[in-house]
Length: 272
Image (cartoon, rainbow, N blue to C red; front, side, top):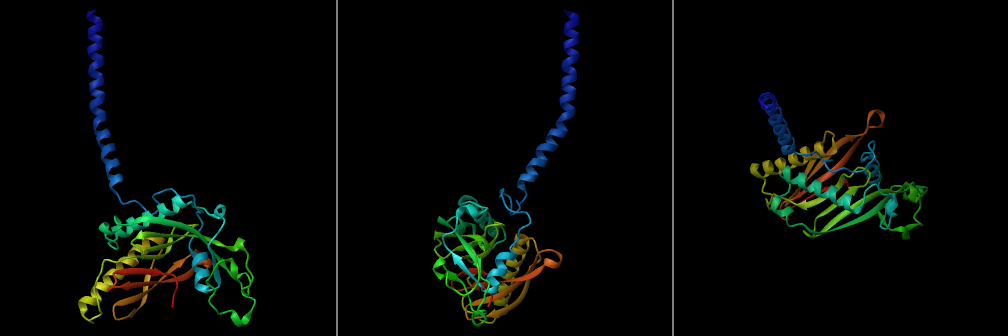
């Protein structure tokens, strides 16, 4: 019995020593886990079943050409996303707009009753030279007689999300990438009428820089502010950025409108 107690005492001592030696590693592991949890999540933090090789080139190219129509009743089986995943992508986008100080956290909390719809952008290859330069953003299949060659198989699935409140907010999402190409949200800045002061210019440039930095991260490419145009109570900034690799790389453009009186910001693919 004494021998058993002596062995038991030795075993307990070894267990205590082993536990003490493992404690620093356990503490380190917990600290690492907390640090990872505290880091800002990337834009693809939720898992989307998307094509890894896809980017926004096809959709932006179709819109920039002006040669397309929109099918409001696409086949749901043709989409990579579901309504739930499309809404998740938009919610993730809005969260990051808050982090970039482009949307107030209090305003985000007021978004209610989202409506998610699928629609397809169908490129048109014109055969009528007289109408080749005309805009073809025509809604619905009732325009089947529109001059040009196209098939529904050429369609580019997209999603639109609107809300009951704020009623003017709107997101247009590319299905293949889960990225937005059109963003309209309540703006932080309420500068009112353009007064030509340095303070007014500085505030507008600061907001444009936040959008530029946000989009560079969001699109994983270098976005540049190309030009600007001032209005009575708004300013328009031209944004340019490359997409694609090697010989397939192209330069694309978006326009950022900051409406200071109405306190709305609009990022649009319809470049004037």
